[in-house]
Image (cartoon, rainbow, N blue to C red; front, side, top):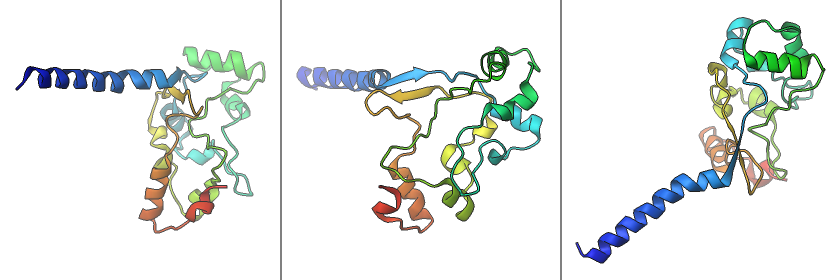
Length: 179
């Protein structure tokens, strides 16, 4: 193998490796959630792994958003355990009656029209189909925000939505999802 080709291949591999490792670190800011929430622990203690017990749809089918602290306060008016996360929740949010400023992994872009009711109620899809098995985890994922778009790295891609629509033989067209 000629020396120049070997040098090119080594340089190419070095640049490729640097791009794969350095670019994500430059492109995304890493943020921790305000409280290290444990889905698995709460599901076990409440006796339900049903997402809708905390993440509810309103009567009109609109997603009500993240759970309000009033749902947490029923059990956490005072710390029940000794974890720093629970102390943070009780002292910083429950007692002063401040909502927890959760970072939203799946905030949709402004040009996307999405209905949880159509997907959960009408189509009968489980939350884990799109959001993963969060109910089985005791670790809150790090929130990675794209510095350019401002959206989470965990936001579902248009390709993932299109793939699911194809699998379920649903033709929504462009205006079915976009404004």
